[in-house]
Length: 286
Image 1: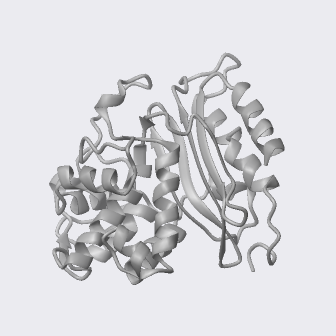
Image 2: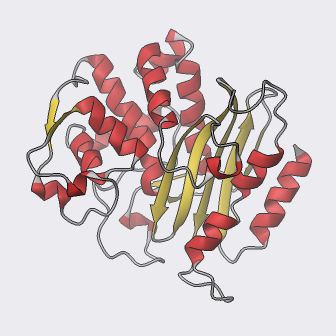
Image 3: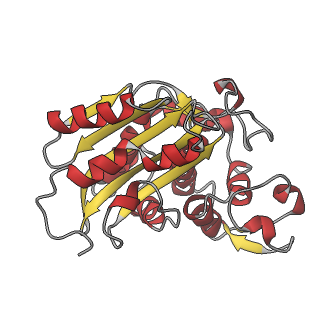
């Protein structure tokens, strides 16, 4: 672990932007981080907490997985993520499918459908209650035209450690009713949350240095200030480690002419962790 930490930090030190990460070995219980409690723009990694809070409302009976949601033209305006921006207004899908598309294609039409059924103060209180002290949801939809160096107060924010806390609580909740109750959910709903994360279609970050069929339950993020990803990496169907990595203040163009987002993709420490962390379990992808 110490060698891995040193190698990951060296990789981060070499970049002209900020990188924050957190990881936990689920076999040994060892944890490590680099500025893991630094508050940074969350981009779409915020949607994991939105998903689980919404599932807690399902557990309470306030929301129903099969309740109809209508795709409205007003929700498609200014959207540049997902597929429902291109669908015919009037299309109706169940809330469960809005949850799925909010995560697996990061669909912002579906995200708005979900958030309009939640109370933001209650969402923030839920995050705080479960230990996500550095996470704040500020807007349903990010303002258009934000510069790469926009103030953090303009968007939702979180920390690499907060995302790890949530993912570990979901894993525990998927196996134990008492742990699920800490999230306000059931074992079945925690399992559904992890299943949805594992159906992720955007696999160019954490999964990109792993065998193609490796199970990863994760949520990516893409914002003007950086790229990020947070998830659980499995060995077969066994959770092996949690990792979350956030890049921030990534310039539009680096001194060598490379686009900043390309460097954020190509040199992320999560790729190193996925390559070298010990995985003494059955073969990946099995």
